[in-house]
Image (cartoon, rainbow, N blue to C red; front, side, top):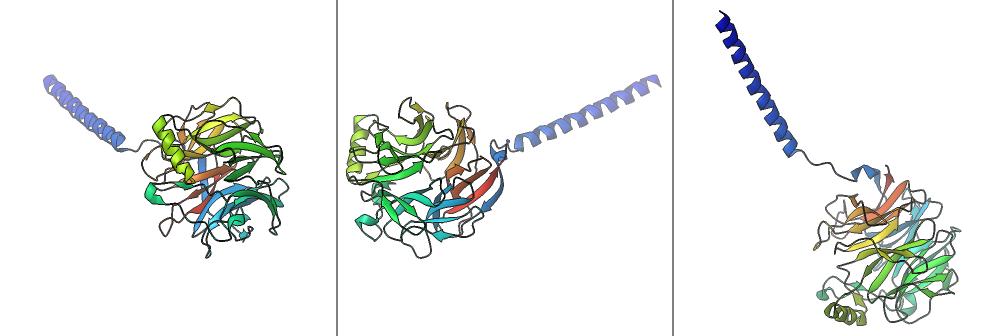
Length: 356
C-alpha cells in the first residue's frame, strides 16, 4: 500500500512536471513571437491630419504657437506657394504672391510678417523641375531670393546677390536670420539682421550646408550638411552644382555656435539625415532620416542628444515622415508625411501631442 501511494505520488509529480514543461514551452514560444517594444512610440499622442490633398510641407509654428506657415502645391498651383492656417487646420490662406516658386517660410516674432524664399523676380512662371535622369537631385534655383512680407503681399527684398539665397529661419529673439547662399560660389550658411544687413558667413567647408535652425536659447545652430571628402566626389559635387543641382543622398546633422565656431558632427551614419530641429529643452534634436532604408524613401523621425548619443526612433510609418518642428513650449510636434495619401506623392501636414 505504501509503495502504491509512493508510485501514485511519483506519477503525479511526473505529470505535473510534464505540464509545467509544456507551460514553459508555450510561454517561451509566446515570448519569441511577441513584437519587441517600439522605442520612441510613446512620444506621439492624439495624431491629427491638418491638410488633405496636394503636396504640403515645411510647416513651422508662429512664435505664439497658434498658427502654422507652410509651402504647398495645391488648388491648381503648378509649384509651391506659401500658406498659413491655425494649428487645428482651419483658416487656410495663401499669403505669397502666387508668382514663381516659393520655399521655407518663417513667421516673424510680431506675428504680422514672415520671411520666405521666392524666384518671382526671375520670372512669374514656375521654374522647370530638376532632371531626375541624373538621379535623385535637388534644384538650387539661382533666382531664389529672401523676402520679408506682410499678409497683404507687401514685399521687402532682403538678399540681392547672384545665385541661390533661401532656407531662411529666425532666431528666438526675432533679430537674426540664418540662411543658405551661393554668394561665394558654394552652398554655405550665413546670418544677417532682419533688414538684410550685417551678413556674416558661418561655414567654410566645400559642400552643401543648409536647413538651419536656432536652439531655444539662441546660442546654437543645428543644420544638415553634405561634405564630399575625396577628389572624385568633390568633382561630382562641383559638376552638379554648376548645373544648379545637388544630390542629397548623404546628409549628416551638425551643431555649431551662432558665430560658426565649435562645429560638432551629431550623426555619422551615412544616411540622408535632414530637417533637424531642437527640442525646447535644448538638449535634444529631432530629425528625419532614411537610416532604416538607406537606398529608399522610407524616412522616419528620430530623436538624438546634441552630443550624438541616445538615438531613438520616433515614427514607424512605411512611407515618408519629415520636416518636424516642436511648438515653442515643446508640447506639440508638427511634421509632414505621405501616410494616408490617396495618390502617389501626396504629402500632408500632421500634428500630435508630445508626451514623455
